[in-house]
Amino acid sequence: MVKNNLDKYLMLDLKRFLIIMGSWLVFVILPNLFFAIFNIEETVFFIIAVLLIPIYFFVSFIYTILRKIYKRRFN
Image (cartoon, rainbow, N blue to C red; front, side, top):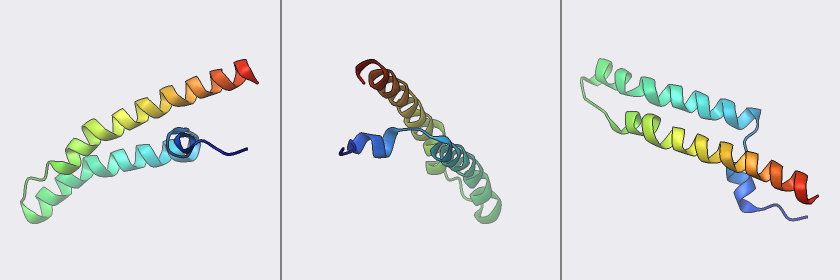
């Protein structure tokens, strides 16, 4: 059986969940670290942490739930 390409990027498991949470934490801390070391306001990392990572998590969560419901019903 050939796996769907979306499964590769959107199916959540414990490992992917921990990677998402760890990357969120890193991207929240990085702007403060840049400001402390270089005295520069860096907002790109904060925007990634506030917008992109939660959107990816939400889409992956919904996809995983719908995929499991679909598999349960039609298999």
